[in-house]
Image 1 (cartoon, rainbow, N blue to C red):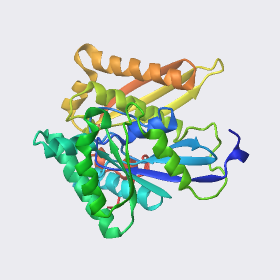
Image 2: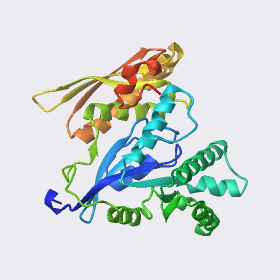
Image 3: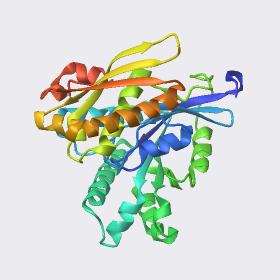
Image 4: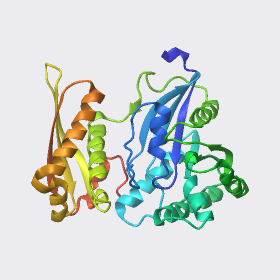
Length: 315
């Protein structure tokens, strides 16, 4: 596709509870990895913008942080970022983990599913109060018989929060094309905002840090990922095409440092190898990745930690 072929362009914000599958859906729509995906909740900390096309429309997909009852400063900043992304978008998709809702109706909910449904209900309440109708996408339809979701569709229709409802599976792609076609029809007339061959609007240094953070989240225990962040300290391009990247893994406690390092350094070696392989594939060149671990008990209270992620500090 050439830029002159694009006649419509706009922003699509994907909002929802943590672990609803927003990053998986973003990657599925873009056709490339622009957002990190793990089985843990609240993976995304800041809006990630992926660029995709359908027909003559360019869609800039904004994968927002999960919306939940936030108490800590970092959590409040992430939730504020999510709602800001929705306010600025031409179309909004509320992504719901339908499997969690169905488990609730059958009295078989796991604690994480109960929390997910509670967070969804709060989002619905906020949408109803604002009076803005959004698009509902019921995710994970590959996990249950479709007739199980019919009562839920009726309930969501009655809420008055939604203009349209789609059933999808972000993981296997079911229903994603139909959702994209509908979103394309909602985009305003306009020229391309990004080159057609660009798949994301995120600085490479930041994406590299997010890839390393993803590997840490996949490897480590559930309680630790919220206490760490990754910063790309230096990036050096060599004449032969190689890239040298130095990153700092910042943790909140001394005990967390030993968890990140692992016995005989095995954990950090695994993380470094996994991140290096993905970055090499992404950049299509040899990457030399060096990771260092630093303890900073107050990193979540430092203004620069938020500005690096494009989040508001004063909330």
